[in-house]
Image (cartoon, rainbow, N blue to C red; front, side, top):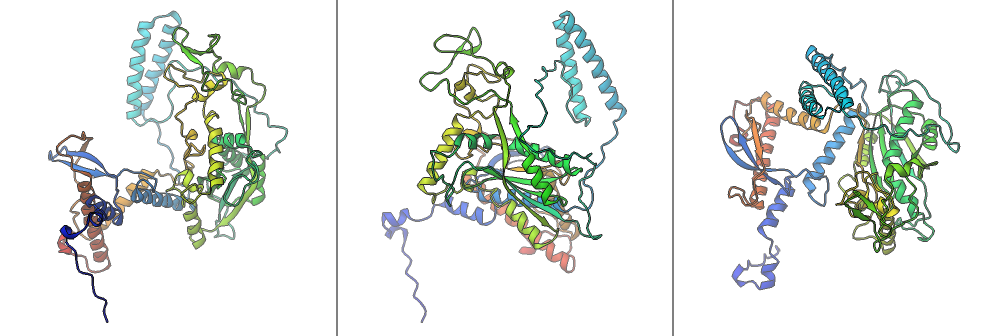
Length: 549
């Protein structure tokens, strides 16, 4: 017997609770957009074709990398990172192209700039401010021409800043020494048995700050070193930079990597990296043990001011002063002049995981997925601080965040005022103790830098280059089978404007979503028709929409 379908009930016959449970049209449009992989938070942009004069408002993807904000855009960004990782991990040829030879125009512009810089120095020495301003304007125009001509790199400013204080580069006595080899100009690893060129997967962690349970919460919060955990998290990117510097000096070639920074359950950051080429485990473990980063900042162990008593801004002195005596606080550079030892030293922990990976294997694909697994989540979500977090785990995160609130994140951080030190760029709009940096926000847990770290010679391509390659592949496939895209890149060029929310030609958000869904369906139909035509007899010049009809 077949089950009888319940009789349909009209809207007028429903109760108020039943009508309230019905889905809204905006929710249906959003669910349809997610199903088709379309951005659910599109930006309305006015596109103007400068050739034909056609003006239309089109939806532009938000480009978010967070799944809790826009799942389609976040998944698209994660897949693009997977392509970037895969293309550069197991290369068998150097990806770096030689730089072009400077042209005569480049040399002429640079020579003119050198003459102006010399004249500027002479005028500055005699106090001719009027001529200095005129030369500065001419140099700015030359810099613009040099950039337009394709010259990269930093141009020497007319008024160079003072050189920073040089700190001792002698290695610490409590750190083991490392061998130093001349760095060869290559990025590829060794070949074994004439055909195998394995690569490496590496995991680095920070030291222990106290015992934690299975959920990552401190077993004894009173003995857990939250201060060291907060400082290590803030300076973790600098420690990674020092690690790669030591690695290249030790192994003797330009090691390239694709890495992601993720939090552990205890809130401390750790690092996963795909390294091109094989490096012995003993060398990597020795490099990790010998790597450290010294933070040459003023000591900030004891708070001098609290919310009840904060430094005040003196408009005459143009500096923050003590609220009781009115004495200007020392600047950051003045406080650093008296340093005899670093304020903090960051080191890795003892856990180092090293594994050899062969390209093109299932294991390589699995590790690429593991590298990009948590890129669509925030730091706190990746650390397990979601709906199912325990009270002890939440209390542990609150204690870490409380320590991060009083830990300076940079030389310009407003938290320095709580320790009686004026940060770089101090001004009247700064609120002492309140920094807007990401390191102080609870969802970042001190991990304020980039989540994905890619060396410059990894694949010799940026994310925009990878996007352009994917678009070029689709267009080439359509052209090969003679299909004209019904909605693709036209001749253009386009001029983009951001309309005001009150503009009458801006459609509501559900209309933008449905417009993007219709566009995605057309693209999918065209691409499917091109694939079918490429596998069989090529069709005549026709549109994919006509084929679908």
